[in-house]
Length: 424
Image 1 (cartoon, rainbow, N blue to C red):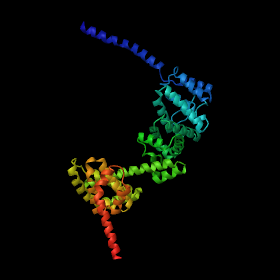
Image 2 (spheres, rainbow, N blue to C red):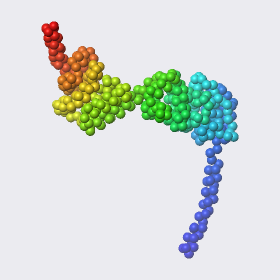
Image 3 (tube, helix red, strand yellow):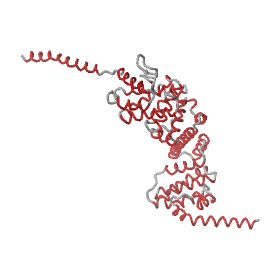
Image 4 (tube, one colour):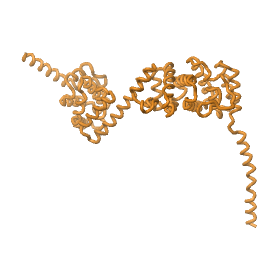
């Protein structure tokens, strides 16, 4: 009886398939079908025509009736290209399309600004479209080869305006590093138009800030193929295109990157205890290769020397530790202070360091005297610093510390002058 009951239960299971069938039917009704959505949007755009104020109002009202969330990509394709785009950027077949879209608009900044307003209003009204819009721009940039030159230009101008106004993140520029676009020079042409548009709206600080925000400030060189990825080539290309600000920004970023790498390398060499002559040779090579000034380099060396040791937190012990440490590295500092300006730069770096690290406040004078005795700092540089080249950081404390030594330097100078006069 029990076995029969269990078998009976098993035989009843197939009745569930009826419900499954119903579920599938419901899913089928809701399957992705953008054609009707496209018809509605195209019809509306054909009615509003070139009046972009009317377009914005139509899009605002339609969001209540049409499924923007589901068909966001279709919506943006139509607004940009007039219809749905197939992979690669060509128009999808057998679909209604409109002539009233970004790609068919006039190629000027005023029209592109008006289009930027349409997108801005739409996304402010339907906040959930924000992510979809960024994805659309990324996709359009990957499709650049499928568009005409005029269509690319309009898209570049629009993208520049949207970036300047903070409507989209600079991370969309990642698409321009696509190997095929880079290889064929499409990326650089597009970037020139985009940056011109961006800089007509905002200054270079807006560009720099946006790129830093997404960690792309060092990547602009990647717009060129590997064999043309040099600072000189980049600088010439963008300067010739009338974008010296971009050229200067990239050069500066490369220099910052090179300096960071060099400082890291210096710290590693010091921690390994490499011979000073090897470190000096390496630095001189880097100066030549990256066109770094001696003043910039002495700042890097000072930072590397001071960060290569764990400092004692007790004020009375840190002085002794600092003198011993700097005595060891004084030949390195001497090798990179062949100019008076480099000596002054070093003095200011020492002043800044002692001010920023409170337990070094009383050590300043002892460091300066040590470096004077080691021929790193000349009396001219020390007197110049004392008289008018010091910074405001801890000024009264450090000038007071240096007072007696400066008086001694002055009297020694006077003595040598009087001796010279007597000899004459």
